[in-house]
Amino acid sequence: MSTGDGKFMRLALELAKRGDGWVNPNPMVGAVIVKDEKIIGLGWHRNFGGRHAEVNAIEDAKRKGHDVRGATMYVTLEPCSHWGKQPPCADRIIEEGFKRVVVAMEDPNPLVAGRGIEKMRKAGIEVEVGVLGREARKLNEIFIKYITTGTPFVSIKLALTLDGFIATENGSSQWITGEEARLKVQELRKRHMAIMVGSGTVLADDPRLNCRLENCPEKVKVILDRSGRVAEAIKAGRRFKLFEDGRAIFFTERPELFEGIAEAYPITEPGEILRKLGELGIDSILIEGGRIACEFLAFADKFYLFYGPKLFGNGIKPFECLKVENADYALLLRIESIERLGESFLVTAYPGDG
Ligand code: AOF
Ligand code: ZN
Image 1 (cartoon, rainbow, N blue to C red):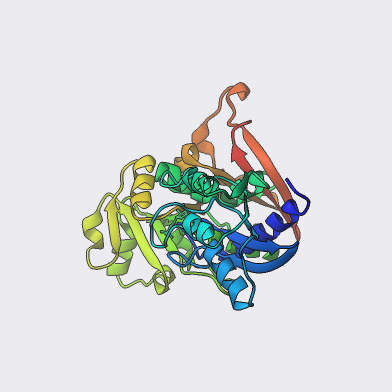
Image 2: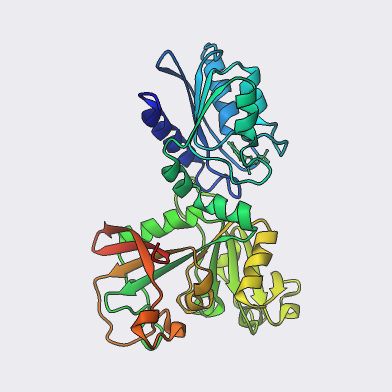
């Protein structure tokens, strides 16, 4: 590793984040071109199907009148070697005469998986892999899961009281957390392609389930509606805000009720639902419904637990289905961070104790 490698890669990671929410199910990728220790080009992957970060950085350098021959490219993901919606970046980097390429992580896409690196090395380019690799893998945890399994990355988001309830006994749950926490939820919605709730939430709260940040793409709304209660309510004349933008997908035991109303698939078990969503091209879901969280618990990749400074004493607990009897068998979580958000705080955690 040369001096400056970390600094330039950090910048590339920051650029990659500009594609947040727009590139799914592709990865967020950033690239920085450096020559004689000066930055001459910046690029990132801006939207799904669009030009790759590396090519955007090359075009940026050229637009500014720089010659990239002999330069170093810092890129957060291994340059691709295959023809997809875009031509292979590794070939372009070779053609342009780069001297050195610094890569944060190998591309987990089986179509690439080291072939881009190999191609560039064979062409005589000095290639270094692994600079800020951990950060790059964290940034693209959604992409890594989806490209290697074909099923979406599952995040469970809950707002809890300090004594662990998501609602009172009669189901009222408004405003457990404050304004800052709600803003953070919007950021989570931005990163995930789909938001999932149960029909109970739709009927009780009529949520929009959209992303209200400036510059945020439309969301896919996934609703588990076993008995088709939402369809029946619509037939009875009710209207729901979730249909105002984006795409709505229902999973139900009575898909026929949804004919002419909404896209619906027969409900099966959670694993099947996730496989179906994967087939539909959805790389990530944010489960926001407290009552359905437990059904998907075994499939959770990440937890976002927001705690508000309140006590209910009794009410609805989110993970009752776990029914741990012996403390030795508790589901273990590995905390990634604890963030204070105004009066609330957010615990971000992964399943497992590793
Ligand atoms: C991106 N953006 O900046 C890089 C990617 O269909 P394509 O041609 O867009 O190819 C998508 C694949 O290309 C993606 O799964 C990943 O393996 C690789 N690299 N993809 O969307 C980029 N560098
Ligand atoms: Zn590429």
